[in-house]
Structure formats: C-alpha cells, structure tokens
Image 1 (tube, rainbow, N blue to C red):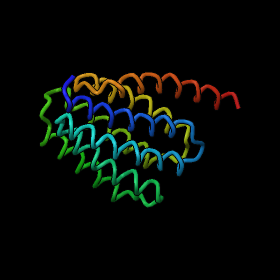
Image 2: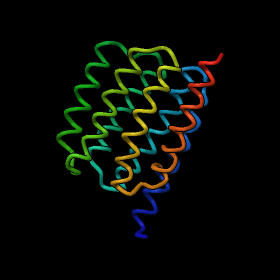
Image 3: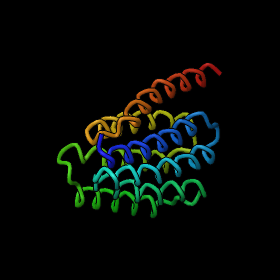
Image 4: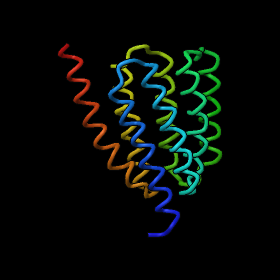
Length: 166
C-alpha cells in the first residue's frame, strides 16, 4: 500500500472514532463536539487522498459543526453555509459524479442540524449522511471509514430503536 493511502486511512480511522463516540452521546452539544473532531480528521483524510470536493465540503462543515456546538447556527448562517458548501463542492469536485455525494450529504445534514434540536432526529440524518460518505470513501479508498460507517449505521439504528422503546 502506498504511503499516502496509509496516512489517509489513519486519518480516516480517527474520523471514524470521533463519529462513533458522537453516536452514543445523548445531548446535541456532546454530539456536535465529537462531530467537530470527525470533521477535522475527515478534512485531513480528503487532503491526503486528493479528494477536493471532500476537503471543501468538510471545511465548510467544520464551520457548521462549531456553530452548532456553540448553539449559534442561525437561519442566515445556515443558508450561507449551504450556498458556500454546494458552490465550492461543485467547483472543486475532481471525482465526477461520485464527488457530488459529499456535497449532497453535507447539504442535507446541514439542514437537519439547523432544523432539529432532537438527537433522535440527528441520528436519522446521520444514517443517511454515513451511507453517502461510506460510498464516497469506498471510491477514494478510505477503507476504515467505509467499515466504521457501515458498523455505525447498524449501531445508530440500534440506538434509534432503543430510544423509541423508552
């Protein structure tokens, strides 16, 4: 395996760990804290694996996650984040149709983070988000994220069912 793939997969694994921790958090603040860590490592993954739509999408998502963590996400900032993310994601896409997945995923997740205060609804959005990113990461060969995100989708579904029973 080439050194850049090893490095990219190490960052991919670290991003996945942060996402895994976020899934079990009960408050939106704790959830978003770990999502900030996920996004930082995802940016590094995409830089190393030369996936520019992933870099730009995650960079804008980092701003969104920090604002959501600080509970400062307004309608105007959400609209700006959506516009910037979609525009930059399309402009810097170097992966063809598959490069649109992070853009679509980020846009949907941004809307959900803004519109809901409910961690259960965030988990639903997370399943969609993780599925799209897992597909994308398979294409760019970030295998720890593919495996981890698949496991996290199963774990998130279990958490959804557990919370529904309460």
